[in-house]
Each structure stands twice: as structure tokens, then as C-alpha cells.
Amino acid sequence: MAIALGIGLILLLLFLAVPFWVALGLGTVALLLTTGVLPLSLLGEALFQGVDSFALIAIPLFVLTGDVMVRSKLAYKLLDFAEATTGSFRSGFGTSTVLGCGFFACISGSDAADAAAIGRITMQRLVDLGYPKPYACALVASGACTGILIPPSIAYIIIALVLGISASTLFVAAMIPGLIVLSGVVLTNVVLNRLNGYENSRNRFSLVKWLVALNDAKWALSIPGIILGGIYSGVFTPTESAAVAVAVALVVGMVQGTIRVKDLPAMLETSARVNGVILPIIGIAMLFAQALTVLDVPQDFVRAVTSITSDPIALKFVMLFIFIVAGMFMETTPNIVILAPLLYPVAKAIGMDQIHFCVFMITSLGLGFITPPMGLNLFVMSGLTGTPIMAIAWRAVPFVITMIGISILVGFVPVLSRS
Image (tube, rainbow, N blue to C red; front, side, top):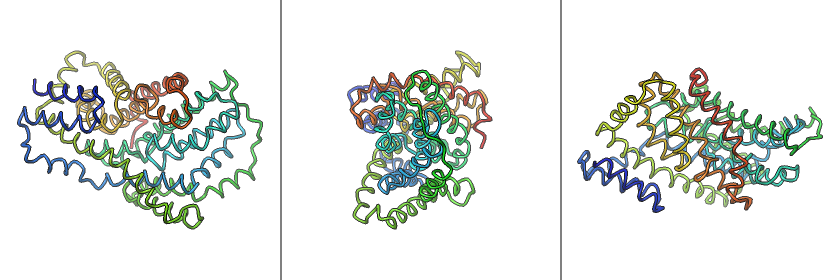
């Protein structure tokens, strides 16, 4: 009853539009008071321990790297290179846009930052080439879903912290599924473009143009190279690679004259704002998860679910359904810190290892960025272009279907997420 009251209070406050971290905090305090599972005198210490992690420093650093890339115009160079590579194909600029999202995902680790950065650069060009504005918004929003799917990813850093796994190991395991999602968005756009005739590129591939674009983008391409190369080679931890990437991007921007010292406070403020949203949620949610664990809630949940069915196939579809619905109503961070400790025991009971479960969960939660009512990428694109959110959401349906299919594939083919 105490647990039900605590969770009920959280849901009520969310319904009243109270910020998530406040609702979760008040619900957690109510749970602690009614169960006595943890003395309130230890509340401050427990909250501090929840965020006292070296790995979490990577989050503001990756966000800062993405902001530096945009302000220094290095992100434009990445898109120019993508266009020189695929621009001669039919649907060429649409494909280039999605590839640009993939490149930026290797830097920022954030869907919303990905959508905002690439949307600013590509939207007008997409419309000029014949894409309807709502569809162009849906394309960018869907491509930007790779922000949490292609490493380095803030979501994988958080779930690694919650479940006690190496973030570097998750980055390795997530690369193939992330690229599959990127390819799925590209192919979906190609098919839709063929059916509707949005774009028909007349450009011919030019090796000279491609080499010029490669040379222009060499510093921009070096940033994801440093991040991923450093992590996968074992030279850097994710946090160290993020710090090195920030330093390199700042130096390049200042040498090229696109960033000045007076720009630094604004960039640091952007990073601090994102971190200020994420860290309170993590600290409180870790405490909430700890209280539920002591009260045996995950174990009771496993027994309740497996008493209905013990079929692994059915349980994977149940988890997929939970992830998709949760993603529709909450952001990725609270979903991870609440659902991961609750559902991992279910996954373990049907033979899923931690790595496979994490990749399956993050891939499935990625749908939430283009599904209303939450649909953060939809809101970003609507804010950028003034297009109604539901008009964008309707055009995003084919991409949602594609991503559901890929989530099922990842859930049932564990070899795709081997580290």
C-alpha cells in the first residue's frame, strides 16, 4: 500500500504538470516516510552518492562539444561532406541529411541537440528540393533519433551508471544497432521519395568535389574520430574522450576564427542547463530505485509478470510495449532510471544478458522522440519551423514503423549487440 501511494503521488503530480524531478522527489520522500526503508537523515548523503560519478562528467562535455561544433561551423562541414558523398543519388540530400544526423550523433550524444543543429542547417534546402515541410521535419526528427542510439550516447552513459556496467562496453555493443537504425531511416526516406517524387537529384558524383569536401571536413571528422577511436582503442574513457573532443573543437574553432573567447560563457551556459535538467533526475531516481530494491519490488514484479507467462518471446514483446508507451509519455532519462532496475530482472529471467537488455531498451526508447504526446524531436522541429506537431507526427509514422521493426530485430537477435 505504501508503495502504491508513493507511485500514485508521483503520477498525480505529473498529471498536474509538476516537473518530473520534483514529482519523483516528493513521491520518494513519501515512500521513505511510510516504509522507513531509509532514514531521512541520510537523504542528502544518498542524493550526493547518486550523482557522485566520474562517468556523469561526460554528459555536459558531450553537449558542450556539440554546441562548439555548431558555433564553429564544423557541423556544416560534416553535412557538406555527407552531401558530396550521397548527393548524386536520387533522394540524395535527404540521405545526406540523415547521414549528417548520424555524424552529429557521434559528437553530441543527444537527440534534441542533433535535431536542432541539423534542422537549422537543412530545413530550407529540403523544402526547396520539393520535400513538404511537415515531411522534412519528420525526416530530420527521425534521423536525429540516432542521437541516443549511435555512441557516444548520454542514454548509454546513464544506463551504464544505473546497472553498473562499463559505458565503453555499451558503446561498442550499440554501434551496429545504431547504424541499422540510421540505415533504416535512410531506406524509408528513399522508398517514400520514390513513391511521392519529393526529390530527384540531377547532380553527378564528382571525385574532385568529394576530395575537396573531405579536406574541408577533416577537422570536423576528427572530432568523432577522437571520441570513438579513443574509446574503442581503450586509450580514453568516455569522459576523457569527451574532454579531449571539447579541447580539440575549441582550438580548431579559435584558430579558424569562428569562435571567440567571449562565446565561451554562452556555450558553458547551454551545457550547464542540460546538465541541470538531467542530474537532479538521476540523483533522485537512483534513491527511488534503491528504496524499491530494498522493498523487493523488482523481484515481486518479476514474479507477477512471469506468473502470467514465462514465454521469452511474449515477455520480450511485453518489454517492448512498455518501452514504447513509456517513451511516449516521459523523457529517456527518467525512463532509464526507473524502468531499467525494474525490467532487467525480467530480462535476466528469460536469458538476456545486461548488454543485450541495455541496447534493446535504448533502441526501443528511441521511438519516444518521434511519438506524441512527448515526442521531444517533434517539438524541436515544430519550434524551428512553426509546423504543427501533429502534422509532423503523422509524416513520421513510416519511420516509427521502421524503428519498431528494428527494435524487434535487436531484441530477438542478440548477436547484433555483442561487445
